[in-house]
Length: 314
Length: 269
Image (cartoon, rainbow over all chains, first blue to last red):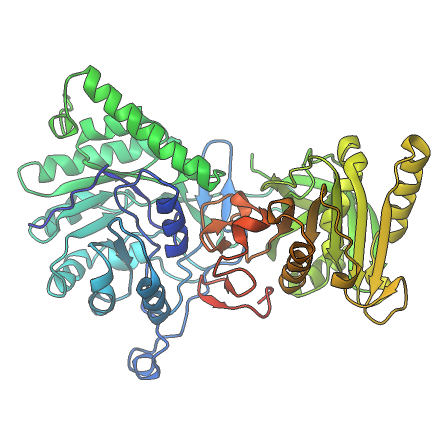
């Protein structure tokens, strides 16, 4: 199976630093990511024929503000997948000078949506992350997580027939990820654990309304790390005898978190909420700090990341 | 517990038919040039420059500001301050176009050092009513003359000549090599002023602009306010001109609410 060789195996979580100009800027400034993920591309098009055929709108607006709510302990977000036409993504890809691998993220409402989008954008990316687990909605919608969690196997198979590139299934900690992981073990290269937790609710005590315009929002940050840690280890138990790797997303804020996720079974590490409030220079510095910490630990313990993966002793 | 401060509106100042200042009951401990997110529960949330340590000045430009203008008292929920501020070093000249004056007025009202280092203020608008805070600037500069005998210039410019110099802001700018220039207004105006200053011998490293883009999170994660890869909310909103003058997005491109990159015409779409 094709594998990603990332140096370092550190990436941004999908939806954070979402556009190619931001990625390009951070790469030029020396950010220590091994690959970058732009935000999820979705099934919307400028092409009138396609729009008619699939009854697509040209874009999905996503929620109004507030789209985030930062409590003391946890960050909630509900952007609800604002999506513009794939053609304008392609225009930006054509002009991009990014050298590091790009992992494309894609979402849709049918397996064909996923494979259509993958075929259009495939030549610009090094791997595909399939977003089947976003818990956020515009009020009245059914979430991608609920819609797609039952179709993950069909989606993975449809995409596998479309691309030779590594396929990552990004699963939700809220769904039956154990059975989903078991069902796709023969088709994917990586399983990403996981998407935001929840969704949760924060109420404004004065107006008695939800703070988020989308009412509920996926939860992220250090507080969710133990939940994702268990998810990583549960999935590791399923895939440990295969070639599948695990990507850990969930509350990584320091090098110790990365080591802990490696012990639980992950080999690639995504950061998101930890970047909150940081300007570009601070992000660059943070990525170096994180990886220097990991390398110092490995050197001191005379080990490697590969040897550490999945060494958890129950 | 959440990030909002439920601020009591102490006073509302009406500058003209579409500009109001809301004076709040709290010192936001902000630097001049920073911004806050103001939330109307059940409606929407938008970024606003601070025009003082406890004041936001708002121009009516769309549904959100129309709704905000309905408030005659009560509370305003805000989070922040966010972003960087003006560097506030040395002698400074502020150049504001229309509602852009509001963000610069924070240099006068926030603390003593910035008020004393500000030695010139150029205000520009279509008519006199666009020259918000004019009296306050004149008064502050006069009182600082009494204290330290420093000479400070207020230059007013109106397009149709109803007050001050008749013409465009670019006609009124007087270059002083030692000064920093803080410019806030529509992006084409800021570019014109900056280029004029450079043509008169001012170093582009001494010119700072306040940039605006469609903002969602305000804390650097959603990327919607990306400006050639800089996130305005955390890398800005204040940018040194030499770092942005050649960027492909400057005065040309912005992202809409869905993140699509489109040509610059109306920032408020």
